[in-house]
Amino acid sequence: MANPLLLDTNILVHLIREDRTGKEISQQYEIRQPGAGSAICIVSVGEIKSLSYQFHWGENRVTSMQNILLELSKISVSNPNIL
Image 1: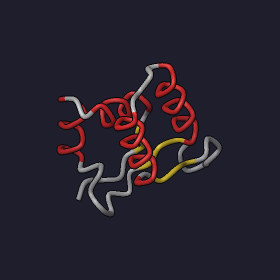
Image 2: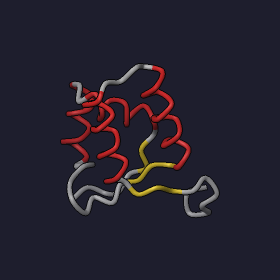
Image 3: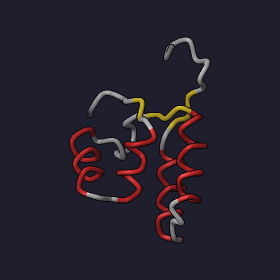
Image 4: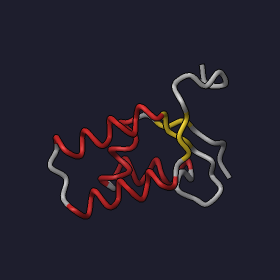
């Protein structure tokens, strides 16, 4: 198992789009594997939801986004372990 990672919004976009970059990141870092422990900052949750609206994502992509958000832990921007 890979070390847990803190993912930024740009990585989420690739994972949700399931493009080549997203697939490579997912496979190389095992981000979506059970127990991987990867996380996102709570700010990224708002950013990705805003992007889904701005990019007019369809139902499939929104569902993919929701699933990924459920899989990942959320980190507060004031978490001293992250700062």
